[in-house]
Image (cartoon, rainbow, N blue to C red; front, side, top):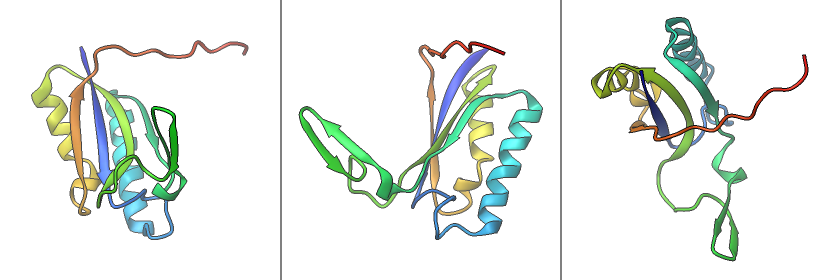
Length: 118
């Protein structure tokens, strides 16, 4: 099955001080549904935009790379039989109902750190 990255764009992280308990619960429910379905391989919620540091060449600056209304608030990698199925998963992301949006991109390759120890 193909893998797709779903980049979640929002005003900021749902985990930030402006995120409501209801918004966070919606994201948690969505994640649990994707885990239960077997579609989600990995996901991460990012900390708020004020924790970002950007690097461009030799220049390091505080804040996200671009100054925009929305930032990448999180991402997940899902498995789906085709782009249409991945888009259906993406449309169910709560960010699409909370004023944000998502971007879906096919994954070309993925590197995973091997787990050691027990």
